[in-house]
Length: 412
Image (cartoon, rainbow, N blue to C red):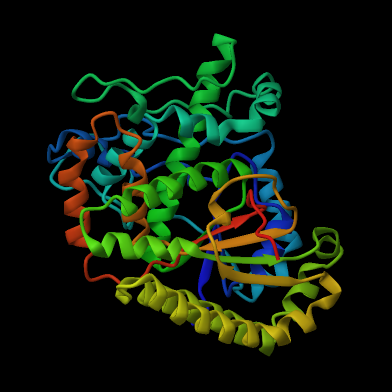
């Protein structure tokens, strides 16, 4: 099986480079429709936050804004990729169909095909958006460019009901990224929208068996921190299976292409590179990730895990040799080994895609584990954590995460 992938949106449309790299890695690539910017359907807000059986559109929940000319640039990109679109290799989707506003409705909120539980997403969002570290991570070095763009558009920083004080009166913090108070508020709104996007699209991809591709450096910084927290939580876990599953994060997989050479190719050129060798390598890669997950879950001793994992990695390297030779003109190289460098942080390597397996049966559980350390009152989170654990106990491995230009490079 070759996984399909979804490129997680930001305030700017996906670039041709992102799309072409994704087409060279996964089967069908999905883009999110420009009109789909909400964390979850508005009509579900009352039920999600109050537990009341009412549905009503009270306004934006936690929308993501758009940079200047977003829709026009999105359409131009689709036009350039029209061959991929016509072949259904590139597709535009929405995560739900927004129901028409008809006042207040008694009963379940219409979700329009939204596959996630809005109450869970709201709770996860509040926990992660309470972390000053994560707020800083998702803004990072973007602050200067965002400050300039904020002067020219009102559509970049959006407010939402999910940001208001919750039932217990708890407020979300303001991001400590700039000293200027006038800019701190809109930058915080952008940071919260990005955190919401991490939650929404990780969960959506889990439900649809997709790989979420987080191309923006802001996403990779935040997810690196969340995954590190998940590892810490699992390593200190009260059960042996939690500790064993943290080994999954030891698998470091990186695919490198020279960006300038990729830029020189048209989308049609890229489609022609989706050869038999590409398909065989992609299937082998997914087999590797599935095997590592099972080995980590079943091996009681570290030595047994290392020995079994090493064999799987060796088999995968052999399966990848033909593709590397075929794409020599693009400067392609594949590194796959055991180590934790992919989560350490460091200097970005341009042209790199890192693939990381979720250490638990679901990405939602991984985000929950990473979110535990974001809360001041972690003990209050334990019942919810156990509930999620019970709900996902029988699930197979998740599709994992993909990062562009991730902040590490393991030594060869």
